[in-house]
Amino acid sequence: WDTEPLPTTCFIGKICPWSYGQIYTIYENQPNLVTLRNYYEGGLTFEASQTVGRDKDCEDDHRTAPTGRPHCGYFVPALKITQLLAAGCDVVVLLADIHGFLDNLKAPIELVEYRVKFYRLAISAILESVGVPTERLQFVLGSSFQKSPEYVMDVYRLCSLVSEHEAKKAGAEIVKQSDNAPLSGLLYPILQVLDEQYLNVDAQFGGLDQRTLFTAAKDWLPKVGCRQCAHLINPMVPGLHGGKMSSSDEDSKIDLLDPPEVVTRKIRKAEAAPRITEGNGILAFTEFVLLSAAALNGRREFRVQRDRDGLEPLVYTSINQVHDVYRNDVLTPQLLKNAVAKALIELMEPIQAAYQASSEWKEITLKAYPSVQRKEKKIKDKGSRYPGSKGGESNSSGSR
Ligand SMILES: N[C@@H](Cc1ccc(O)cc1)C(=O)O
Image 1: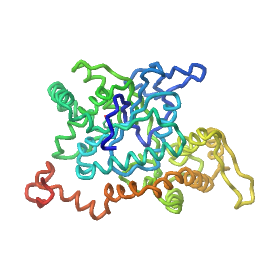
Image 2: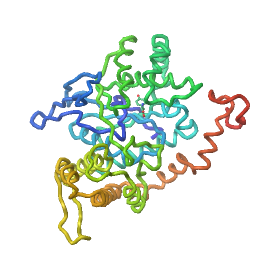
Image 3: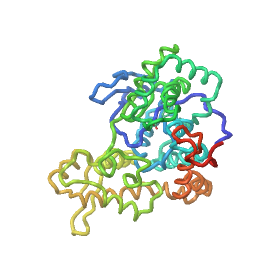
Image 4: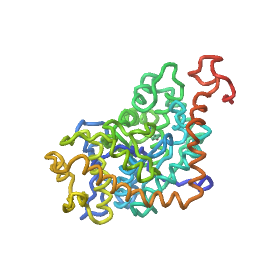
């Protein structure tokens, strides 16, 4: 895909892998209308309701910075993308390669090219696994337009109009904060804000953690005479340990390529207090991934096998039913976990089959995510020119 021509239109916006929520309404009786709505009750800054023509330019942007390996949380935005595609939206997934290293070199510059390829293969496989038609889906590489003279000039322009404080505030939740942080962390929000212009999209879709960047887009873009676009925000889905699901925390996530026994083990270890539905990552996953995927496959149901106890399976068609039985402990954490592990393993099967069948994907995996030791060495060895380095402390073999 390096040699693919650039798509002309894009939908940008991070699809935050751990995010979820009802963010738009598709009117079945008015198939050419999609209403984008903010369902978040906290009153965020994007337009409360915006109706866009479906056949024209309804473009949605899912963006992702290729850092840690995409995990099963990616099913959540993938299902949202699926729904947008089903509604006839043009969806652009921005593979934000430059952002991957602007954020404190989270994706080292030498690896970013491979990670982008890995992300693209993984996201495509997820979407294909849920059987969505992908003609209206495009992937765009950030660096394919972020180095153009016009874009770079707009970066300079915005840098002269936005204060250091504002840039810091905009990136505070996303960009790694540290003492003597690299300057690139201040550029990060400037570029993200410009991306939605250059991708020429109607809406950017991201997790709640992106809200300050979305606000910045509203505030800053008019300064350089740009139009505003809508921002769609999903709340965060809790990870397996209750907190944010993170690409960089091995324990909080299930890798897309984890074999079935590892999936089962990780789910068994996940936190799921009996009777408590709030902050329960396993229930959130059931709602936003398993039930949605089942609906896409034509039968919205969640099945809990109980053959071990010689009982009939429990079958639920809505998350409310699941919550009710979980609260009264008919559905115990153990039963729930077994059912979720089974359904997830089934969901992952076609993705893993696609991986096994692709020598290209396997090769890229090795290049994008070399062994832990090598990775650690690389991180340590950022070279004396790395802004956080204390002159002379690191040897210079990594500097260029
Ligand atoms: N900020 C996003 C990545 C991103 C980068 C550039 C964008 O234009 C959009 C999104 C993240 O947290 O992963």
